[in-house]
Structures are given as structure tokens and as C-alpha cells.
Image 1 (tube, rainbow, N blue to C red):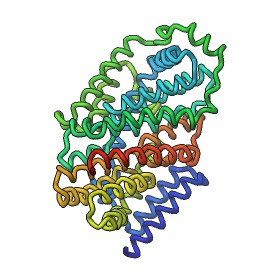
Image 2: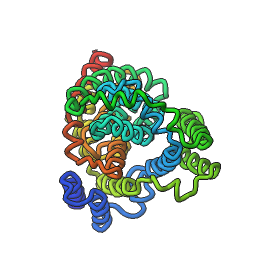
Image 3: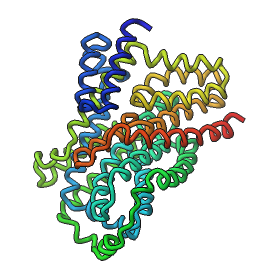
Image 4: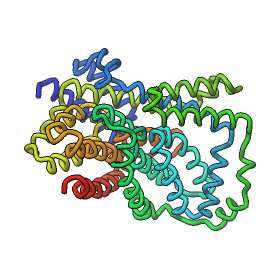
Length: 430
């Protein structure tokens, strides 16, 4: 690698260390790292702000912005309070049952929506229900972020890397349902068990709080019925457009912004009220992180690491599949999985053709998808959903540290990727 490439690695590792150690605010670390990358010409304005492969992913930024506005309006209706009481009553106030209910809902929704949208919708419910039952909210938020990443792996639209893989590999929505969804269901069953092992100290049952919850009427929580129906109508349109992406060809970011604009225009909610819930620090953090990772792409670092991993397999399909799965999981834990998949997909496309095209070689696409999607659970910055959840938690006075998330995420990632390994081997390689 060139001197500039090594410098960009040093800058990225320095910023990453600051984010992980939390010695300075993560936004300051990301922006500082992005600024240095631009200053040393590891990237430039054109690549940082306009490139599809190495720049700020404005689709992610504006998707977040649009959905945050929609969630902000929904919050004013009291619907989250309604859902919180409903969920607590269905779980009969039992903490573990409640977590299982919330993570299953999160994973199921993430298969139809993108995982970031799902956590934006489920987090407000989680805060309210945990407050009602006097439960620590952080374990529930961490579990939901991980469930969203697992559930999002099931479909083409569930996780942004899947959209990139489908485009490059010529794969359909049904291909993902057939090859990814069955294993995701199994992973969720295992994850529900892991939740008990990882978070059992948080499951303190309070009979009095539970009785109070059971006596409540969730319908009384709705503060504005008209606004609720308007909001739900717009949200339904947005969800339908997400699901119909392969037909309509509207980017999720465009759908979210159109939905947010329609909701503000059609209701009596003011612009100031609508944007009050926008997590601006989270959006800025993403921008800085995208610029830093983009610099690694521009200087060839990510491509070089990927090629070395592939070359080490000597063209053997089984070995290539396993290396690709685990290397993707490891790298997606460190850098955002969107630019990683964008960089890796051309290499995988060549490998697929060299191994029989989308016949026998198609397993490589599933290895890349599983590795990138599940590897995002490993660290606090491995996936967009993780960053969003941490931002929401901090805003609501329940900060989640980098290592607090990561100590659970590493376990979940190792277990889930380890389970995918025999699945790929037995289904495609024997």
C-alpha cells in the first residue's frame, strides 16, 4: 500500500480509538477524522460528498431524516404510549416475555422495512414501557438493535447491503426469501435464548407495577385521533413504497422525505414541532464516518484487504465461502457494512463467475450478505441501526457506551455467524 494509504489507516484507527474510548464525543472524533482525511488528500470533496462508493451515503442520511420527522409527528399522537401499554399487558408485566415480544416485532418489521426505520419506530415504545415497569431500558435497546440487524438480513429491502448485493448479483426479492429468510428465522430463535443469557440480570419482575399496567386502558393514551389516522396513513404509504422498491424504483430516502413532507403539509403540526425529534448529532456522526471509510476506499485499503482474504483461498469454492463469510463479519464490525459491500461486490461478482455463475457460485453472495449483515452486530458502529439506537438513548438520558454495546455484540455475532457456517456448508457445498 502507498504512504497515503497507511496514513489513512492511522487516521481511521486514531478516530476509532477515540470513539471506542469515549475520551471525546463520538461526533467530534468522526468529524475530526473526516477533516484530517480531507486535509491529507486521502479523499477530496468530489469523492467525499458525491461518490456513490466512497462518499457520504446521502440515501442513509435522508432516510434517517425523513423517518425521524415522521416518528416525531407520531409521537405527538400518543400512539407510542398506547403500544407500550399494549405490549406490557400482553407480556403480563414479565420482563423477559416483554423483551421477546419486542425483539420479535423488531426483527419482523426489519424484514419489510429497513432496520433503521424499525428501530426509530420501536425505541420510543421501549422507553415508555420500561419506565412503566421500572426496568433498565439499555438492555432492551441493545437487544432491539441486534434483532433489527438479524431480521433485516432476511429480505432484499431489510438491510442496505442486501440492495447492493442484489443489484450487482442480479438477485431478486424472492431469492433472498428462499436463501436468507429460513436461516434468519433459526437465528432469531437462538437470539431469543441469548437474550436470556446476556440480559437476565435486567429481568426483575415487579408485581405491583405489573398490576398497575394490567389495570390501564391503552386506548386512553391516544391524545389526537385525527393526527394519528393521518400519520398512520402516511406511514402505510411509506411502508408500501419500501416494500415495492423493486417495482417503483424509488430510493428509500426519497420515499422517507416525501412521506415526511406530505405529513407536515397535510397536518397542523408546525415545522419546528416536526423536526424537534430529529437526532442531528447522529446524522452528523454518520457523515463523518462515511467520509473516513470512503477515504479507506479511495486509497485502496478496503479493496486490498478484501483481495488478500480472497487470494488466500486459492480459488477453492468452499474455502472461499468460509473466508468471505468470516472476513465480511470481521470487517463489517469495524467499518460500516455499506461501503464494505460496495467495495467487495465487484470482487465477489468475478469469483461467482469463476465458480459457475449464479449456480454453484451463488453461495458467495449469501456468504457476503450474511457476513456483512450479522457482522454489523459486533460493535456499536458496525451498523446504522446501532448508531441510531445509541443516539436515541443518549438523547433520552440513558447513554450506551461503545464497550457496553460491543461486549454483547461480539458474542451475538460469533454465535450467529458460527451457526450460518454449517448452513452454507450443508446447503450449498456438499
